[in-house]
Image 1: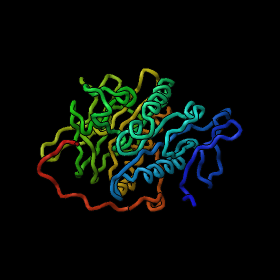
Image 2: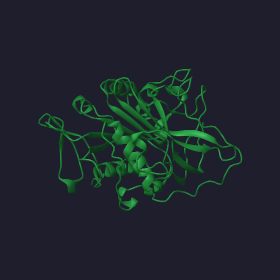
Image 3: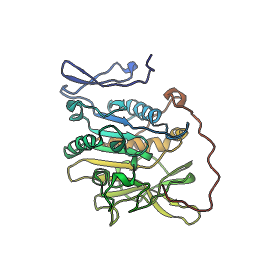
Image 4: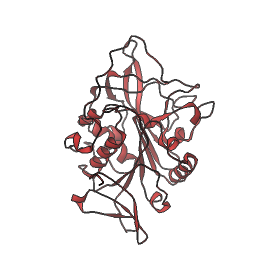
Amino acid sequence: MKPAWASALFVVGGLVLLPLPADKNRVCAAAADSPPPQVLIVVGPSLHPPGTHEVLAGARVLEYMLEHVEGLPPVATAVVNQWPQDKRLRDHVQTVVFTGDIFPGETLPNPEAVKADLGAMTARGCGIVCVHYATGLRAQHVSPDGDHPLLRWMGGYFATGCKHHRSVARVVTATLSPAEVDHPVLRGWKAFTFDDEPYWNNYFGTDGPAANVTPLVTTMMPPEAPKKETVVWAIQRPDGGRGLGIVVPHYFRNWRIADLRTLVLNGICWTAQLEIPANGLHGTLPDLAQFEPASVEPLPPPKPKTKTKTAS
C-alpha cells in the first residue's frame, strides 16, 4: 500500500496531470488556459544515514511548503524519483528542483539523455535548483578543467573528489547571512545559526563567478581560519532562465528553521519566475515525522576537528 506522500505522473486524455495533496482537490493540466506554476522535484539516490540528507522526506517538505506557501497563488508540485519521459510535462514545468547525493542528472539512469532534456528545458527558460549534495559533481562527471553544463545552468557546483578543484564538506556550527545585495531571494529572512554541513570553497569556474552569477548567502569558514564563503548563489541566464544553488541542509531537523524555509521558498519560486513579495515567502510545517523520514533526529554531530579536510 502506497504511503500518503507517494507521488506519480499521469497522462489522461492527452493532459499531463500533476498529483497534489488530496485536501486541496486540485489538478494541474498542462493544456489548461491559465495553469498554476508547475514545479517538478526530482529525487536522486542517497546512501546517507538516517536524519541526514533524507532526500525523499526533504522533497516532501519542499512539496508541502510550495503547496501551502503564503503570499502566492497555488503552486502545482510533484515529487518523482525518476526522470519524466513525457515531453509534454517537461515542456510545461517552470522549474526543476533536485535532491540527492550528487547532482541527479548524473546519477539517474541514462544521464546523457537526462542532461539533453535539461539542456532543452533550460534553453526555453526553465529554472533549476539543487539542494545540498545535489549541487555536487565528482571527477568522472566533469571535464579535466571542471567544465560541466551545471556551471551554465546553475552558475557553480560543489566539487567533490575532483582534481581541478577541492570543495570542503564538514559539519560545523555556522551562521548563514544574506549578502549585501538587493535580490528577491533575500527578502523576508534574517541571518541564522545552526549545526549543519555548509559546503564551502564551491566551484564557479576557472575565473570565479561569471558576471551573471550573484553570491546571495555567505558564511565564515573554516572556524579556525574564517573567511567569507558563498553557500547560496543565483544565476540569471542569457536564455532568460534562472538557477539557484544552496548547499544546505544536511540535517533533516533543520527544516524546522523558519528563516531557512523562507530562503529556500524564495529561491525556488524566483527560479520559477514568480514575484517574491517584499516580506518574502512563508509557511508553517506540521511535525517533521509526517514527511516519513528514516529518522527525524540525526546521529550526534561529530566532534570538532582541528584540521580541515577537503571533500573526497
